[in-house]
Amino acid sequence: MPAVTVDNVLVLPRIPKVDPTQAAHRRVRSVTTAPASFEGEGFPVRRAFAGVPRADLDPFVHMDQMGEVEYAPGEPKGTSWHPHRGFETVTYMIDGVFDHQDSNGGGGRITNGDTQWMTAGAGILHIEAPPEQLVASGGLFHGIQLWVNLPRANKWNPPRYQDIRGREARLLSSDDGGALVRVIAGEVAGHHGPGSTFTPMTLLHATVSPGARLQLPWRADFNALVHVLAGRGSVGVEARPIHLGQLAVFGDGDTLTIAADTRQDSRTPDLEVLVLGGKPIGEPVFHYGPFVMNTKAEIIEAIEDYQAGRLGTIPAQPVPHRHPATSTRPGKSTRPKRGRVRRRLP
Ligand code: MN
Image (cartoon, rainbow, N blue to C red; front, side):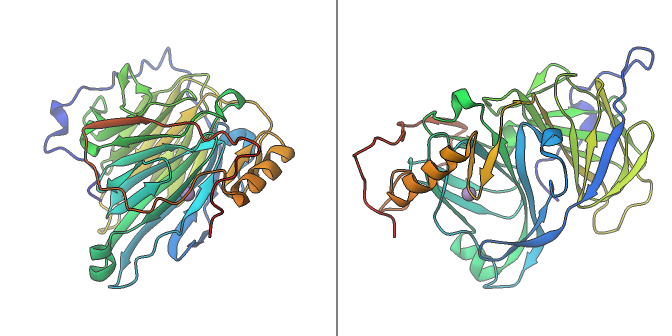
């Protein structure tokens, strides 16, 4: 699992040691196991949030762990062009390569440790697929796609695309050097990640060495979720067991505890976890297919707008792959205008 790593974790800024007399440790509310299935045209996914009450997930809507899978030549598959409205898709690649293109001119290639953050807002079409050479060669593929809801006030924002390189993630060490923390968005102990979010949230990927324990300060007004990408360990001060493909929902408090078992599989030497939390939006959620809105009427409107070609059009030419250090693309609004119908989608 390459993502982004360092030769010597001890040179990194350290997350301060938690004062046991001050900390309000969050206990684990639930541990659920993601059912595995197949997405779109065929990559294996774990539906991380399946069976978890929506109120526990808010502001997050959906999360897939894609892979880890070792593709045979010719096997890698992607999605076809499809729409989104009302939320943001966050794709974090751990292993392998994924290309992305959208109808707003956003797009790029992401690989080990890179993140693409697409704000669908009022509406967008996009396609995600492995590059041709990876399809030809096969190879390792492992990533995460997270859907972050937008509050009502931001659902009609123009679409936006952030290209976040793996090296831009804020790297931190646990207080004893036993864990590497990559902050992708939000903040941990005053250290900020590069992702810009509408909904206040924190997203990080931590690698915890066998036998090590990671304690994270966590905003009391955020929810707290831990998804295990690889390995086995425990969560909470009560040390509830957890392993690959499981999600822990934490209760109230300001400190999270994650520990790696001393013995791990030879294939995945460390415990790898995605830790995420955000400020609950607290609005009604109507989620249907690729649309996440506040009302059923808005879902029907989104379907009609998509069918009328008002969520954007497929670009004639592929977007050249860009690798800027940082790219935040403000887009033009695609707020549907009644009476102005663009080309109908195929
Ligand atoms: Mn999509």
